[in-house]
Amino acid sequence: MTISIRRPDDMHIHLREGKPLASYAADTTQWFARGLIMPNTTSPITTPEAVSQYRAYILKAVPAFTPLMTFKITRDVKPELVSALKKAGAVAGKYYPKGATTNSGDGGEDVGDFYPLFQEMEREGLVLSIHCEDPTAPVLEREVAFLCQVERIVHRFPRLKLVIEHVSSKETVSFLKGMPETVGATITVHHLLLTLDDLLGSGINPHLFCKPIVKTKADREALRAAVFSGDRRFFFGSDSAPHPRRMKECENGAGGIYSSPVAIPLLAELFVENGAEALLNDFTGRFGAEFYGLPLNEGTLTLTEDPWIVESEYHGVVPLWAGRSVRFRRMLT
Ligand code: NCD
Ligand code: ZN
Image (cartoon, rainbow, N blue to C red; front, side, top):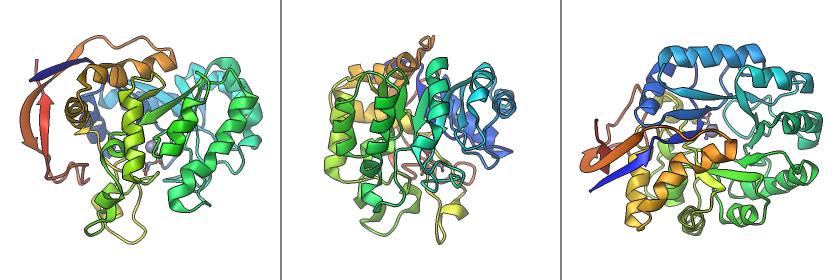
């Protein structure tokens, strides 16, 4: 069996910075033509200069890849900067609630503090990308607890395009169904495949720990139903977030799942098993681009059925599905 899809987009990816970036980026470009690059690097991407420097750094490592840049929304990002951020290549600004995830100590405490910035983003046609979790709520309820903040923004800025990133719960799926067309959502492969039992059911697996945490079977079913309904507002964003093994296998281990090397073949397998292979192309190569108003990628990625075992480590990072079998591989053309 072979499956051919338009070269896909990863609408949420962490490439980090410095030396490891080249390795992570190379794993991504095996599969993806473009990626929306998250700005929560150790030195945050908050200025037009940082956006263009980071973009140039990525392009140097992977010239054939198209990085879609973002900036991080902090108090330092003044509304007057928005047009320069856009000129520097940013297509979205990312809002992190303070303390919600990796490198979010400089995140927002109240969405209301950023209304002047959101207004400028709305005017300039930039997307507001949201890490939708209230870190003060109980861990399984954090996503749902933040939805009221999203609702405030949607009502206040009816023309602002907004993405709820890495949706993980059934409540958020129903919330999204009631939202206008300006509100989209990314879904990861790990939230479509895993539940809390994979993370905690037979010994802790820190490599499956991420924000937002994978949840129950009912949540996973709701995410699958959303994707298999072909609803264009749900599109693929891997949230592939590499952390070196020692940062995961320790006390207070970091959140983040490294899925770039396996995301597309695992999605293909899931879609095929659910008789939904015809929908894979739109989920990975159309809906995200259309939401962002981007042209669709040229070229095709062909997968062929030829099982392989995922390596236990990639550049010191333990990937999703390490040591397990994957049904499809990329056909080299
Ligand atoms: C991400 C990271 O490590 O940068 N971690 C994660 O658990 N998903 C940040 C994020 O997207 O929350
Ligand atoms: Zn992320």
